[in-house]
Length: 96
Image (cartoon, rainbow, N blue to C red; front, top):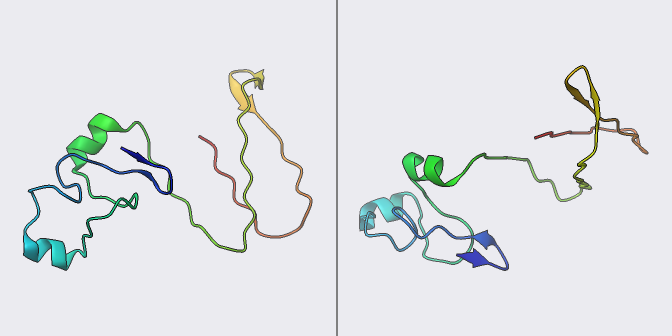
């Protein structure tokens, strides 16, 4: 189910309210029952329900920008793009 503040909350096995949890394991892993977008999921359920996983490092003072481009240069089967950076510094690019 989608939470407008936090995104998706898993409701299957190993979700916050799942009967799979023992009290001891819940304490050990600090599992909280909350609609916060943080959840546990088995690898088999993950594979069945998700196509990809993107992990990024979030830093408060960084500026983020993203875009989708449906049209692109296709030279010899390669997808091409360019970026013009307005400031010097550390830059991270993720392409998927």
